[in-house]
Length: 193
Ligand code: GRF
Image (cartoon, rainbow, N blue to C red; front, side, top):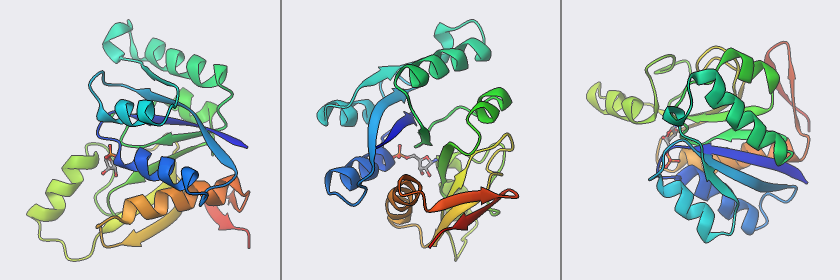
């Protein structure tokens, strides 16, 4: 059973999609060990509670610096034996030390077809706003591994058309990883059939 830790900051619709996919049996080999929120009032925490999933708030301003904040997150994840970290609307850019420690063990969902609308400053809501403002015709979502470059890690899955795309490919990526059907070679994802 792959132990997952989910990092959230907001509404948690992507967290919900993963919870539902585990409860329905679509994802069979994984369980959510803990949910960490960087915001006290995140609705994602309520979703975890409703499903009896361990949850905790780890807030940046309670720590002296970013390093100590990430240490607290690491300690919590490690104490739960987390093997896959899922960023589901987590609003803090991870430190290089953190991404290196969990190399190829962190995945993120990004609301665009990377390489469009990505990099520093293009967090969730901002991307949605830009896509509407610029009248972009073709958009979608990307699930990718996380490395030290913002939105720069190997791409696992992409899907065009935003509507509910995230809630389909995020659980699909977790399913593939939990079934050992994904490897990363030369910074590229390879599907094992
Ligand atoms: C999503 O748009 C996701 O792509 C981005 O942040 C948003 C999180 O939404 N990274 P939710 O909290 O999962 O509802």
